[in-house]
Length: 180
Image 1 (cartoon, rainbow, N blue to C red):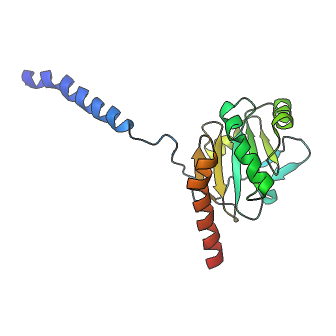
Image 2 (image 1 turned 90 degrees about the vertical axis):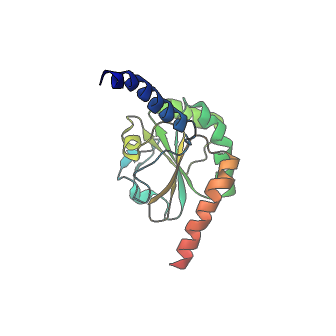
Image 3 (image 1 turned 30 degrees about the vertical axis):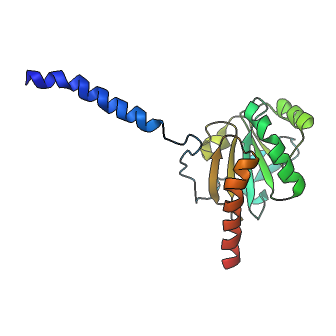
């Protein structure tokens, strides 16, 4: 029995090493979400520009992106040209969620960098972000025309991610709509 006690640290070391080795191969951009294939959480929230109170009923009735951003977020600045291009090209509506930010800072950021959003929700206290399971900005959700979350991307949405992940997913959603 005393010899067996000598092997406990060795077994523990190998178990920990195996766990850490497995972690090297996890994709950090794919975080599971319990909200996939579920409707967006209900909300009633003011827009960044303060011009209106918005609810789920005000969201586009077609496929759209829900982009979580903040004026403090450097990666948001990196993905911004892609969002601007999508908005200007009219490829897909983009709704923003300004997450845990100050309204004045958000307005200033949009004035300086451009506004790709149909409207942007002001989530100063982070309640909507919590309901969405947001870890931090940037995150982008693909929402179908029924308001159901179909995909979640954590990190920068650049042109490569757009082409490789979002375009095929949107094409699949559009094909499902035609088949209905």
